[in-house]
Length: 179
Image 1: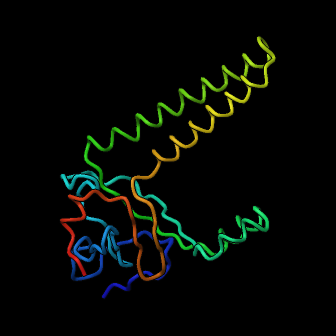
Image 2: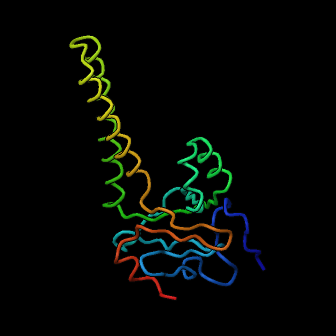
């Protein structure tokens, strides 16, 4: 009999005697994946047959540590990194939904180049603080778009026993059993 992994950093794999995807279920708008299970090979947005991507790392830390950010940002980052739980999980996307993150990544690259050009114009052409601030705003938008394109699902909770992910489409959620 195969032993279920207890380390959340180990990729989730199927349990002996059961289909790996049959162990997943739905809890409201959350997808619950117990340790030792994986997502079904269907698009997590539209439930169409899908190709599984490379495993992504989903990390979570208890939000009760978030007030540390008001004390000191670095203390919050170190504490959250030390206390986080994580899991690697392959997510399925159909070809249509696989294209969107690529386009958002391309858009973020174009915005980064535009921000560089704007900053160069601020220094060498106009010597304007306002144009330099515009470059910073463009880079901020590029970072937000690039980050949003990186993950289709986000972790709502991760422990050694299970992972709870949010962001699945209603068709995919409706295909999962409720518990």
